Amino acid sequence: QVQVAESGGGLVQPGGSLRLSCVASGSIFSVSGMAWYRQGPGEERELVARIIKSGGTTYADFVKGRFTISRDSGDNTMYLQMNNLKPEDTAVYYCNADLITNWGSNESMWGQGTQVLVSS
Image 1 (cartoon, rainbow, N blue to C red):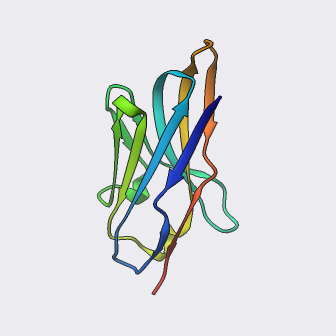
Image 2: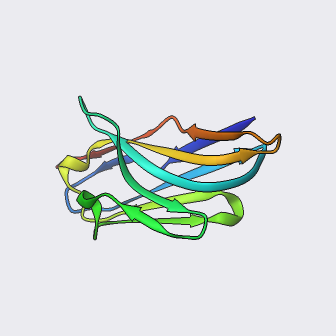
């Protein structure tokens, strides 16, 4: 069994910061890449940032310079440091992990999401 779980969401004022965490756990052989997505009210889910096994990163234009994605490969944990948050960053943030299980199957796993609300 494999699980992906996010934490760290909450309410923050505009200009504030939050740090999201994601852990992939269970019968995992390896994790090739992890990513953060978000879905705002009435909107489609969109990519926020991605990090691959080598450490290479990709960011959506709307978060460049404000958000930083990082990863601790040793325990399959990923982080999203979000600074200078704006009301338009309000969304449910989802973790996605591309992995190989111990029984050899390729899986793309999603967490349940964590709510980020940016409001004064």
